Amino acid sequence: MTVCFYQSGEVLIEGEALTLNTTIEQLSIVPRLANTRRNIFLNDGSKLETDDNKAIDDLCRYFDKNIFHLLLHKLEKNWSYALIALIATIIFLWGSIEYAVPTTVKWAAKGIPYSIEQDIGERGLETLDKWLFSPSAIDKVEQIRLQKQFKILTASSKGKYHYQLLLRTSEYMGANALALPGGIIILTDSLFKLAENDQQIISVLAHEMGHIEHQHALRLLFQSSITALFMAGVLGDMSSVTSLSVTLPTVLVERRYSREFEQEADQYAVSFLKVQKMDVDSFTRILTLLEQAHDVDTEFDYLSSHPAMHKRIELINSGAGNGLEVRL
Image (cartoon, rainbow, N blue to C red; front, top):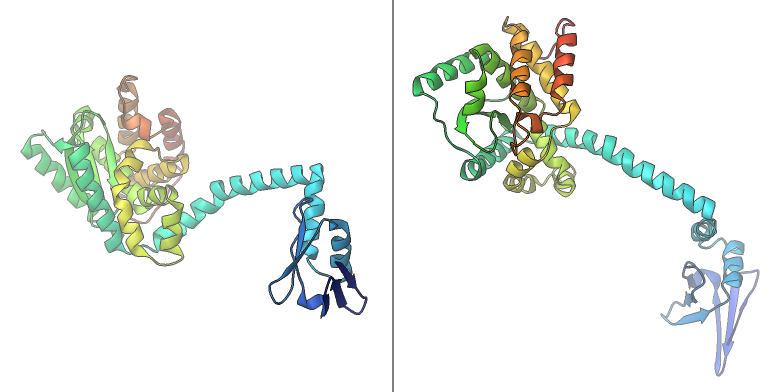
C-alpha cells in the first residue's frame, strides 16, 4: 500500500482493490514514541502503520501537525536536555514541597469553619484518651486553681477560639503539653510537677495557644494528606477534612513541628506574657528545666516534638526586648 501526500493537503491512499482520497486534516497522526511503529488513523476508525518515522515527521513539520510532540522527541534524544529537564523537575518538586504546599496549606486552613476545627480536635482527643492518656492524678484543688488562672488569661483573647485546659497523665509523653485544633490544650502531670511556679506553666500554655491561633496542628494534618487538602480547599469538601481527625493523634505525636511553627508559637507566648505583664524569663526557665530533664531513653517527650530547645531559648532571649506583637 502507498500513501501520497500533496502540497495542497490532499492524500491519496492506494492498495490492492483500494483507492481512497482524503485530506491531511482528516487524518490523526499519533505522536512519535522513540522508534516504534507509527499509526495514522482515518475518520472511519481504520488505521495505517509505518516504520518510516522520519517521513512522517517531515510531513508533520510541513503541515504543522504534532509540532509540540516533535519538539519533545527532539529533546528526549539529547542527553543534555534530558539532564536539564531532570534538574528542573527536582527543583520544581523541592520548591513545591518547601514553599507551595505550606502556602496552600495555610490558605486552606483559614477556610475551615470553626465548627469543623472543633470537631477535629474533639475527635482527636477521644482517640488520645483511649490510646495515650489517663486521668490526671494532680490534686483536684490544684487543678481548679490552675483552671481559674487559665480562664482569666484566655478571657483576654480576642480570637475565635474557646480554650479548654485538660490535665492528663502519660508515661509515654512525660513532661509535655499538646495543642489540638479548636482550642483544646492538654498539659501532662509530669510537666505540672516539673514547673517551679504557675508562671512557668502559663508560659507553656501560652506557647500552645500560639500553635492553636496559627492553626499549626491543622496545617500539619493537611501537609500529611495533600489529597484532603485539595478536596477541602479547592472542591470545598469539608467531610473529607473531618474524617482526617482519626489520623490527628498520630500526626501530632509522631511528627515534629517545623522550626517556623515553633518560632511563631514562641513569639505568641512572649507577646502574651508581656500583655499579661508577666516575666518572659518564666518561659525560658521552664524550657531550660525541660532540656535538663530530658532523658535519652524516653521514647517521647517535650524535646522530641519541640526541636532545638537551646536555639529557641536564645531566640526568645534575643527577641524578648524587641517588641514582638500579636493580637490577643
